[in-house]
Length: 511
Image 1 (cartoon, rainbow, N blue to C red):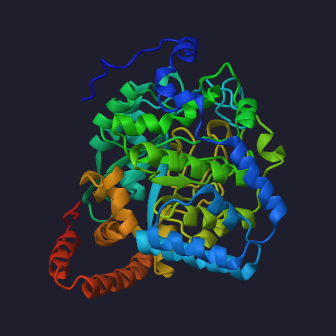
Image 2 (image 1 turned 120 degrees about the vertical axis):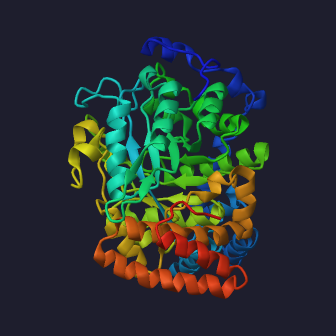
């Protein structure tokens, strides 16, 4: 059990707002008060994009070659050059390179997960968000541990997910103690798979929550938190202050932007960055994301484990998602993802079910590595709506665009020779933080993960797949085994032995 003696308790929302932020934990990472998001530099680069026109193709190809060969984060200036590319043929070269990098680092795998919303109480007033304090259209609740078990019985026991992203509103009722207890609950519960009867459950709990102090982060590390995900929403300080009222905790720009520095100091060494595309000029946001990644590397030699690309979507009680002047179309969104893959070559790229099925299908060939499916983001939505793809605007943060089930998604991916990965082995073997950064950049991690993807794919096919999905999955798995035999001939007998044990019903075998 977690030890909560080191963390502070807050009884009221007002007490939380006034006393939660620890200024010393901000100042440490902004020496001399200078922020690592260089607003003047970003604006200079954007001005150059507007004035300089198409870049020299030779320069673009040099940057692409650097990204492919070193798999190190590009500089903002290099990313700026890629942003200036308008020529369709040259952009197609960028797309092809993005997918080659993805396959080198992650192979032909797509990792799947489910979002699981724990609460929609919040002390903040974000103008674009359905969860904001004062929005009378939201029906508020916090899941009890018994209700969480009901949600898990669907997410893990009926759908077959192995990893979730647990999402928490910022409020004293969803304190660090609550987050830790819910993580432990997720790991503690097992269910009988509907097809095989084998015991199944959640093996990795990633968290999307508010920025926390170092002491709180250490508590979450002790209960096995996976990736800690905090979205900046916008890096443009002026717009950030306009969207997030000064009276709110989230209104403190510096507390939020230094969150991952505290994570890495606390030993929570897998962190996930993201902005809300559509709030501000996408060029500003992507350049700032590169600066953020580079500053984490400067302090800790560890960059972001994932980058997420949510777009503004309609939400209850707000018109901001419809009225923002910075909304982006699908072609621009596609461009952003390609440039991001080239700019931070080692990172995972998450495209969520906010996007339409068509948008996500298109992005599969440009560097995406993770997606969610069978998603329900209403509070207690999985168990209330069972297998129905039903949405409830009054108890969810925004509306989803892709309602495909996990079974449908697995079948679609397999039709494109992409293996769905349910693997969580690397995290439990200690391949996190700096260790996984090195393994990703060299391509070693992709080889481990391919083997584990095959084993977990075998599990899921036997435990959950429909007949149609199982049929196409069987063809893919035979192809994957042949591939492993070809590039790891000496190790293949060991892999085959563990694969056959999995097929007989043994679960959670990994390398």
